[in-house]
Image (cartoon, rainbow, N blue to C red; front, side, top):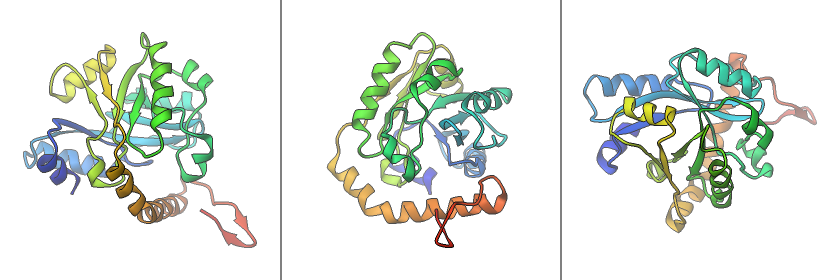
Length: 232
């Protein structure tokens, strides 16, 4: 479904699929694209929920364990020749309960990230994007900038982008490593925000189901209980 949308409704040449704490969907999509069924390159990735915020691992065919400190998470990504991007930095702290966890500035200062996401299409992150962009301007010598749609619904795919010299995944990687990328802010879109708002119940239900599966798989601890009832 994602590949169909990308190839018929966008002009993207390279996409990265980074589901939370898994790369199964990315591996499947990459295989379909590699077999010539879709004219787009797919980077296998995952969005790892580290103990210090979410970290995007690009070019990561092996799973990275969640809940490790950021430094260990980035080291695990690098160990499989992947690149580590700090996801939605400077998001409001109160959003943590909704799963939008991020690290603090000292984490970004000290951990060996390869890039910083300065453009994210999640509604209400407009100011956070600017905070991230300001941080990047003072650290651009060690961090590439990236843009990611963080698309929990199809219509958001491609609304934030990473621009680089070239059109291939190899060229994108070279640009990130050489810090030659640019990122496009998504801008203000009432229609996109309305679509997100309309899909919030579905997005939250899917997130609860995902977390329950991770508990069953042993990669997430049992949630705390309140009055004998399990919470998400």
